[in-house]
Length: 240
Image (cartoon, rainbow, N blue to C red; front, side, top):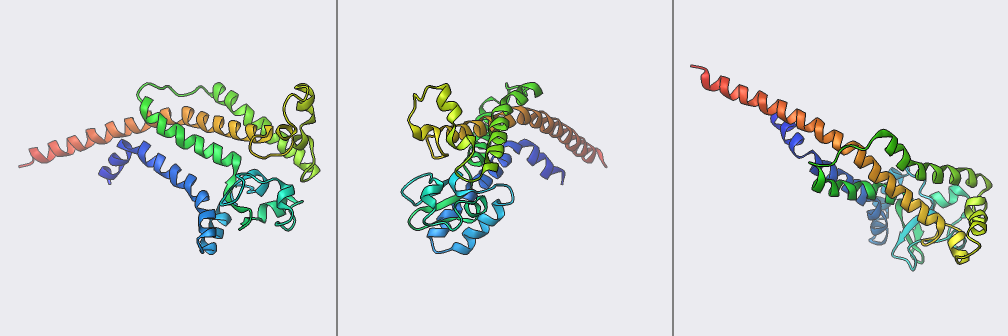
């Protein structure tokens, strides 16, 4: 058992990145299964990830369709109840539109950010110090603000609310960008940009704060176990 814990302490980063990689990859497998004649397995992935994500189709990436993201207006002819949040959550896709990834664009950015930052951490693990708590809070603010304002705006229903039209932003920027930048959540819009960037930033912040602490913890465990094993070997050699 000690050897198992020793191996884990030596390679904790590899096991952690592998685990995050599997967690990140499975939602992308769902649409692959849907078009590969295995919809039962695909829907099982959708069901599992629905426990941690709203999976609204208008805020998700689509595979095997003409567009990477689809507005709720484009979903309406294909998705029963596309004008309701529950309908957008239940809809997984069609051959015409493609099939959605099993979690939202923000979750893709967040967990993808953790995975990428975890891989990058392997290059700086001996030099990087843990992020201070106040800096972590600061880097979390964009996602907290974006998520909270979306939550409040969603009370007005699908296709409504101040975060759907972003008229306030259009006024602030004097309508310098095309209307598609301000309205909706499709890729390239302000909402999409904020959801992706804030999720990615939060994922990086999690790694920056947690992984140096884990590095120190597992290093101490490794040294303790190595010392204990050396003592056991020495005691065994000294026995008559």
